[in-house]
Length: 360
Ligand code: ZN
Image (cartoon, rainbow, N blue to C red):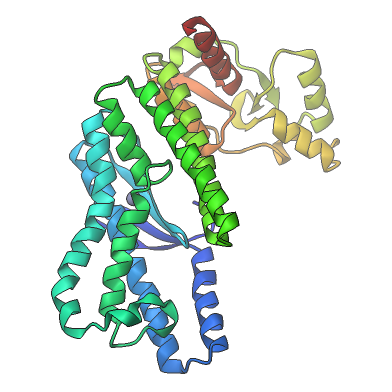
């Protein structure tokens, strides 16, 4: 993820924190100062947030290590102010595997809470654990315990993108085909999300409204993504390969590239220097360059210099996921050293449309 601070690796998994996390710390400091807390109290609050931060990393590691059981690698874990994200290289699609991976995160929080329990009964004054603003030595552990229970509960809300959404889909998936399970889980998630937004409005809880929107978008995205992935399953890159490479030379002007858009079939191009590919140029990049009045500049200056290559036997759903992740509209396809063609986003979209139309 962009704008993240790299912290280190735990069992081979890269751990980063998103810069907006510093805003959270800043917000705590400011709100603490405004409520008249002294330095020790502020340090306790910051310490508390940092410990929660560690709990969130452990939660994500729970997912990552469970996924590893099924030979799924985790590229990285990023911590955001609203929680963590573990980027798995693929998603487990067997219901049992998805269930285990989804439950592993919240389970970590439950275990932390259980471990804290004996200490809490000795030191706690339960009345004090409600507010974050007065964290101190007396209520640190009880508050940490209750936060972990909340984290487990919150993540188990049965809606995408929460873990509970995956749990729900996995449970449905034992009896229903994957796309249908996703559709039902996404619908339940969206109904819940609308409920959250309404409740937030009436109870004057802006945080609930925010969570509602977040869940609504998550559910929509998951339904779309899983539908396309399902449709592409079983195809390979070779099935959408275009043997003719839509090449344009790197010294061509942006204006001439735009006229290629109008007068040829191609929407995305491979930029070449002396016949060798050095970059890619998408329709959006051409339009953006025109809007910025770069008409006369060579395309070499506005193109994407990182050319992605695929092999013809690669599963198409994987290739498509990679293209989405790296934001590529066109990629080269190579067999050994030889370029045998390109894959254009448009061809994949067409395949999805065709399959959708014929499966109805
Ligand atoms: Zn989780």
